[in-house]
Image (cartoon, rainbow, N blue to C red; front, top):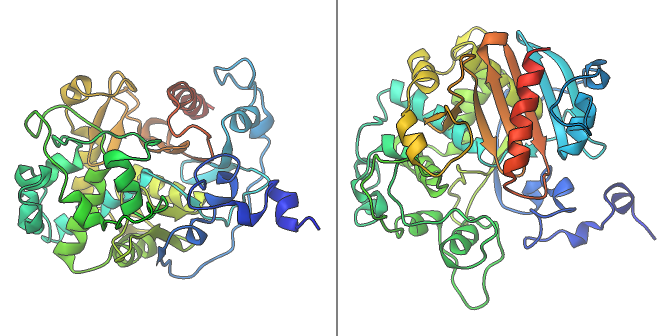
Length: 390
């Protein structure tokens, strides 16, 4: 007999495994239910609260999306494999979209937007005097001595300017990247081979050819190391810190989560899941210079630095062709455009886009088949800019 699950998703729950959960069609379900695939820790909100979808006619209004085949926002969102979409203007949700398998109260993995969230915790702890971005990594993590991180600063890590002998290859199943995926428990173990912990793997990585502090190189291990630095310096687990210093003060209405490895180390480079609306609340808080619900959640100076600092030359000299005028600072992307737009991006089509000039926040959570799709990334960016003009 065909189950209700199969009718809804087109495959059986038993078909989804650790080996295929990030591939189509299984990702339409697994991206909402990561805790059934990988161990997770809960990021608690104060009181989990139901939310009702905002219905507006904006989705079906003609709009220049930049694509001939997507003449309305709804058509673009369907074209771009969207699971959940939230549009905020001046702090109010004015439009939402959820795919049939999604919904306003469902969590969704945000992949590398987790990096940007983790950096906010670093900023909070730096204001507390617990952390200092200019100090060397080994000040907080002595066992990093002898690795790529043995002679770099936390600022190098925050800005992805570490010289690291590591290739960010999402489809790789062997070599450094395959070992990395197995250490975070996102890929099945290899028969007869031990599984690393995140700490063990990261402190075994070697330095690249150049010096630290040079060109921008996007390498996820940096962001996982950032989480370990935060946990070591604070004596607290990331899930608890995010809950107590960000999620509850911000007024999040849903519990979030983060994946962990075999010894409970958080996967801060990509393991967070949350509601689309709560992610939009993060964007609105940053638009308001770190203030949410009347609380100064993120230090104003940290937000200002994130939005205005960062080396354009390091960006140009690096390996990124996106955002010709761009910069990267504290795990956030800066557009370099006059509108001051900044964003956080995750593979498979996860976006948090903030345009202060039009008081706009956009969240787009997706199950895009290709982890990296440069053409679709450009399409998404153009779509967000069009929304800001509405």
